[in-house]
Image 1: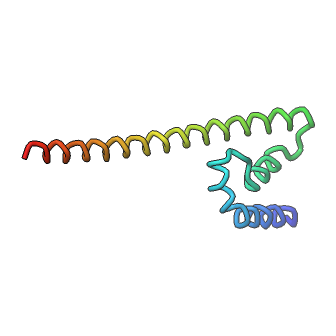
Image 2: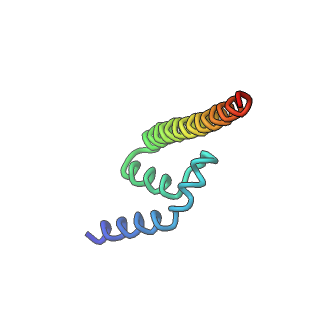
Image 3: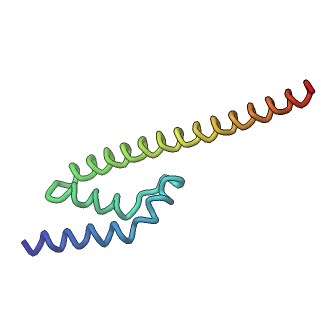
Length: 98
């Protein structure tokens, strides 16, 4: 029971301390303290080779998810720029017609 309280306190502390790091990690693709705590918890009681394989799998999944988010964000930004350019062209065309 005492171990569970420490584990809970550690997770809460990592969440509070690593909150801003999550936003920074999205642009730099680096692991955050929250990722490290999650990896540590998921590898408790596992052997060395199992730990290495599990951590590699989790890092690959995080990288894929972050890359997908970054691509979606970039696509949305480009779409907004295209809409603005279209509006500008429409206004310019209306000005020429007058």
